[in-house]
Length: 534
Image: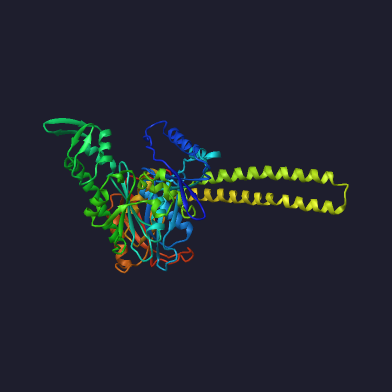
């Protein structure tokens, strides 16, 4: 947790605290986290006004992808499909989704999109940040939070992209940030726990076997520096530093190898762009000498990410001993611009709007009553006084008109939500078999082919699936080659049989920036699908 205060001259760091979160299996996890937050806020003076929260875990997704140019509504649907593929069946009704584009002003036919999703069951979380605990202003994911620091402090138009390795307990996440924003992210299944596990266990010293518990292993990590020559003291016993390095070296080399592979993949998919330097952050990055070790292994200039120094944040003396790399994500969330992406669920926004309308209605009613009382007391006075009072009344009724406009906007928003749900139901999103079909199509369709429509019909007692696909010619492949690749992909897939096809008439009123070069209508049967729910 980090508390910042923005001043005219610079940003001031008021307080920072690192707390170990309880296990996700703990039934009192929410209450324990709430208690920590309230205790942190209670000792602050002045109290925070707004709060930004970061979410991570298996049900949280951050995706960087490239898509054809399309209008905002179609882009929203495409983002939902992409996130559904990454999260194994994301339900838009149960997740809060946000996205932003990196090169919207570019003249190319594609755009780079950063999309994120978190579960929208945050009503209990919103209750924590009420009254004196600050207002929940933004919800985002760890890569997007860290991007706010890196893009501001390290990325320049004349420099290359910057890689950030956020080392957690069970896994690490590599992100690459360019001048416009997040360009690449990948999860690496090696974290700080791998080093602790490698140290824990039995070790033989001078003919004597000692047991190193996980608690002692954590203490060794705090006092050990990679490549140190002297011994490490463990509860009065000395352990040679070479033995410590020999135990943890395989885990560190796995981390370095996966980092190199991820950077190579990024370079191949981004016009052979080379990363300028690698920044380390997170609780697992506090191992002394890790930056030098990874620099030697990856051949990339590596250093610790100090968000407070990078953003020129004034740090009090009492907090200078804290490891800044641990607070990189929290600091990024504090300086993040919510207009870029904000994953606060829509229903929280709606509840706030209803509360605002309710409070505004009460205030307006009280004001009108006071105005009427004043008119009663001054009715016997001159006509000019009455006219002034009437003008005050007209001013008092102005908030009611704004309230009516807000109610109308809320009704239109609800109608739009119903339309989106109906559209998703027609596509079968949320049904297990339909999700598997959509995922298989997403995996096998070649680049340059895009699904426009999907429907089912019964012919001769057999249920068939009809697909209408858009085909865009590419420099490397013509439309004829793309059609052959698409048909071959369907025929070789274990999902589909009896594939037939015919050219389709290209629609002229779909509003696309670029019309497809060809459209192809295909018909096939889906193995094991009998059409339930159609």
